[in-house]
Structures are given as structure tokens and as C-alpha cells.
Length: 420
Image 1: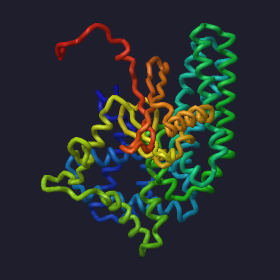
Image 2: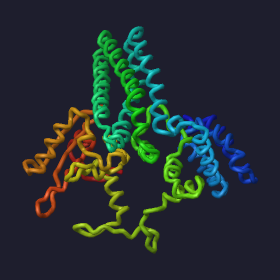
Image 3: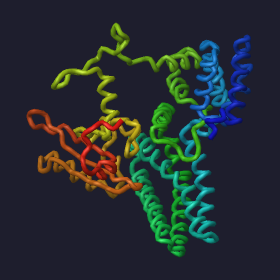
């Protein structure tokens, strides 16, 4: 209900403190003079909140130039943290910091589920299980955003094993849900204890095996790319902080080509404008794509694909993921980390044999489609695979389509008139 009564107190307090900092900068204070104050402000705020606060100040009439000076302060905070020996992965905002923060929350919730299994009835177990369920998002982010970057370093075996363990935990949730739905207290208690144990084991594997190896293998630039794709998947219980900044991490990694760290920061700030097509007279891009019937600007093609009621992904002839439609209504999670990834690594180990069988049948032209449908979260989901060939019959790749067909499945009769 907070949207009806203004911002939460903590956010209002941060907005006020941020305004004071900007006013000090506008009055002539150096970034170094307000660095500690800004550090304390953002330490417990996530990056999107800081951006939102800045936007609200601009909309309130504060000159953009004054707000922009915050970037210098942020750069100073980032630089100071690294110079005093603080490890990047311990700075709020770094993907590893977020994983560990989520693990702390998961550990507390797994203990609560274990207590409910020993002392509580069905309502207590159900409530504790729901509190723990967001851990699935944590696993989805590992599978879709962290694992692809580890695979590029040759670190594939442990991630495949972990994905299989993720699926075991998903199955444990389903088993517990079934026991709760059946009203079987004894079974629910047993399933709850098993689920809590599996989650605790996964936390141990992450903290002792996965994350230490990831920190050794991935560069600052890799971590910056991992971070940029995380929002597409989401987070469990916590949001990334704003202290570690992927743009600044990338700038520092390439700072050898710049005279100073500050110059690298400025290059990172301007990097977002590079690579955009030149605008035409109306300001719109002129990069129209010729199609078999007509042509469309690239931006329009992209927006059409994202607006379809169907999620689309394309795997090329080498079994590499080349595209997915980043629509807001996706059925299955996707993030930029899967681009260029072997499609076999985009599925849990138990599904790889089926995926390879489908692709091989398409390459040999033995089949022209593969359709599946499943019940998921009370929804009826259809997944369809179709091979794509050129005019000469050469195999170009496979198109994957998935959509929520629940409402279509329930239609009866006819609708011939607009009912707006």
C-alpha cells in the first residue's frame, strides 16, 4: 500500500540525503569531500533505487548537470574501495556478493522449514516452504547467467552437476507440494526435512566450490557482463547494491589505455552511445532490413518479435543459441548470457539426450517438428521446435517457440463481435 502513501521512510530519507549531497556539490564541494557520505548512503541501497532517486530529483527541477556530478563521487567510492584492498566480490552490487547475500537468507529459511517440519503442522510447513521457494530464482540466475561464462573458461563439469542438483531441489518442492495438497502430515514433514537438507547442501557447494572457482576464472569484464544480464532473471529476497558498478569495473579493467582511472570512467560513461545506428531525418534509425515481402526497420522487427504472444529462440546449425525474444511475458527465463552458448548446456543434464535427438532428426530431415505440452504452476504450456532450412534445403538451425495456452485451451463457442 506504500504507493498510496508516498515513499517508504527509508527511501524518503535516502532521497533527502542524496539531495543534500548534490547541493553540496553544486555549492562547490569536491567529490572527495562527500565521498564517505555518499558511500554510507548507497551501501544499503540497490542500484535501481539510486537511479530512481536521481531521476526523481531531475523531475523535481534539479539541473541534470548537478546530478551528473554524482558519477564522479561514485567513481571515487569505487576506486577507494579497491585501493584499500577491499575485494570486489565483497562490494554490494558484485554478483558474488549478491549470491552470498541470498544464501544467507536461504540458510535462515531452510532452518525455519526444518523447525516447522519437527514442530509444526501443515500450515506452518506450507508457510515456511513458500518463504524458501524464491531460491529457485537464485538457481535460474546461476543456470542462465553465471554458468555460460564459466563454460567459456572450460569449467563445465561442476556446473552440469549443480544444474542436476537444482532439478532435484525443484522436484523436492513438487513432492512437498503434493504431500501438503494431500493433507499427509507425516509425508509433508519428511519431504520438508529433505528439501531443507538439499538446499543447505547446495549452499555449501556454492560457497566452497562454485564461487571460489568462479572468482579465479572470471575477469572483471566477465563479472560486469554477468551483472548486466542478471536483472533479466531476477533475484531472491535481496537486490544488488550500488557500491560495485559494472561500468566502472569494465573501465578499470581497460584503464591501461587511459591516462587515469577518471578518464576510463568517462570512457565507460560514453560507451553506451557507441554502436547505435545513425538516425535519419526524423531521428529514427535508417537500418531497414529487407524481407521476403517488404522491409522493416531493425527496431520495429525487434519490437514485433518481443510483442508476439509466443517466446522465440533460435539455435544455429552449430547448435549455438543466437537469439531469443526478450518479451516481458516469457514462459521460461532467459538472459544475455546464453547467446553463443551450446544449446545442450542450456538444458538440465537429464534433458540433453532428448534435445540432441531432436536436433539430429532435423539435420537429417527425418522430422519437421517436435511438440510438447506441460502443466506448470496451474498453466498449460506448449513448447514447439521447428527446423529452418534455406531455399536449397540446407539446415540453418532450429526455432524454439513456447507459449502459455491456458486461455486458448479454455475457449468455447465463437466471438464475432468486438467486446470492448
